[in-house]
Image (tube, rainbow, N blue to C red; front, side, top):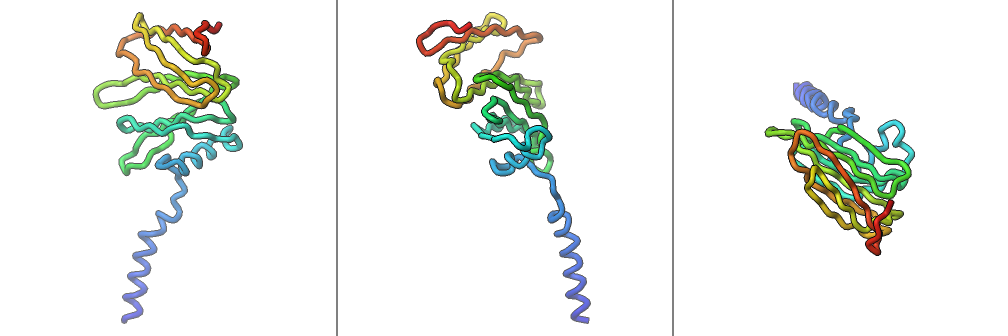
Length: 173
């Protein structure tokens, strides 16, 4: 009788533990798991990966990174269990400074942010962004990997115009 109780308890424990053991889904909950997620995506599995930052906005996690020294990012959305599920990944080849529109879904409305990712080859020291007549300036450290953000104004349509300057203040074509 005592052995049957032990077997029943062990059986119940196994039934509760097995789903956790065989759950192979990887989430972006920390830096180590973010690297695993990126490496699990076709086309990104053999690239060098450098995480530059981890930024949480509402239920979204944005991770600017360098993929084989190319600027990029991966975006996660928090699920009902609190785990960050992979939503989108993007990179720009052969660029030292790249911009990415980031859509943050909130209950009120969709917000748009602009993410800038630079690698160590970046020679842009300052950027001027004209968004529908509103001017935004961002400075970058030349020859350093970096991340910058701009919160864009909520408008129905957005038109961008960039101007880039080198460390001497000269306009870059």
